[in-house]
Image (cartoon, rainbow, N blue to C red):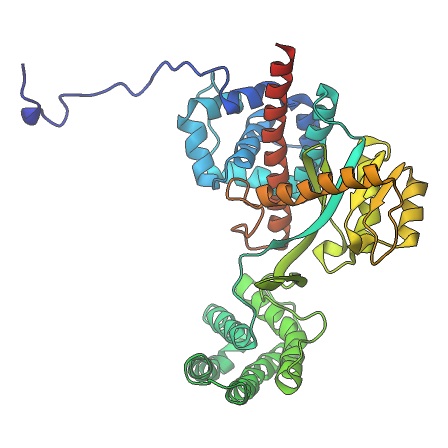
Length: 451
């Protein structure tokens, strides 16, 4: 017998293929068997048709790529990890209908397909799956409980010093890549960037009191304003449209700072945050959402409406995720339910933030039989005591759903993305993953009850 220590590099070659049997009860196998693939493929095809000028060239591998989307929904993984799992993990290949194929999508293909779907497509996928769950008899659409929550963005805390320094860093980096009319200000921009770096360091390390921080902040403001004026003077001289990513980025940042710098000055002079304050230079549409929670009074991101329907969940945005009153979300939640299932729920619950006599009348007019919007103060419930107790119990479960969606498994909160559109897409994908997992659990319960 040969000594294992004396085996050569090429003595023990192993086969690179394997015959693997997958368990019938594996989560991905069961998901592949219950998902409404034909309807989802039709949805994806209609979305592609609406976005391309002509349906020419090879069609996407719809079934396979939708399987990849489902995989990323139930497993919080990156595009590269999805590529690796689909190529080498048998249940993932089964989910993507690739067991008898040698083809496998790469991470770029999966990313491009997800981009093509966008938030609208991902939302449509979720709605299609919910209707399928309703047809399977595991979703009862007669009861609706709603709430609002914030999807936090993965951004640093938006303080004035950080925003001004970030503007200078981005502008200085872009100026290194452009020439022409920007060459004249490049050396001056480097001097300003160096000065800003020193002032930012001074603010973070040595300014201890509010007055000291305000004085350093004003010096920083005037230094950044000098760079902004230099850039605006160059842009004003140009008659032709800018070309190139770096040049367009400088123009975008300059226009953004026209709004942000007055907001920063307002805070430095008054100590109050300006209305509609810009909190991020690359995702300027993000909002500061006042939640009033212990330890976290403000969350930075998008505000979602959440509908819980028999344990399943669907989310929607109003005002592009901006600050909208709960009273408006309250009625819009019912309308979203009607758009999806074709009729109003018999029972509806919302917290006291949505309470008003007008909202109760609107909900009843939309077709809700039991309007369980929690009253404020000493006002009575609009439903019986037994029904109000039932609604309170069911409404408490909405917080559990929100907590689950925000967990690591689904990744609703702080997604690793760099645009508002990608945040919305990630949010809807989290709902889809939660609903797919919920459907599998409900089918298990259904089978146990039949035994």
